[in-house]
Length: 137
Image (cartoon, rainbow, N blue to C red; front, side, top):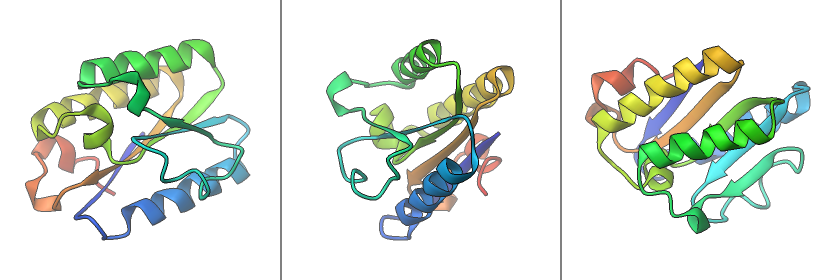
């Protein structure tokens, strides 16, 4: 499953994501991973989630991000949920068509390995490509 939280900066996406991460940590037996660019969520996300600042890893494309996520899973088969805050920043790419292709990959990867993805995108919903809109919750 893939869910997208989309809206302009300051619309409450990050607060909503924090609540979702913390709620998932409370009710799941699987590992919960939260990716962010920077360290702004450090004190908000429950300690039971694996919070990863992606900025030191030089992720500059969706292809590299796919490899990063695949590597995380290869190191921990218990991952059941992956949250990505500010996907466009984490991926280093704001092209909405490429974003849609990445979300489609997340859907296939998640179905194969039993992982749910939740991502936030800082952009007006009307700017989202059709391939992104189908995941908006």
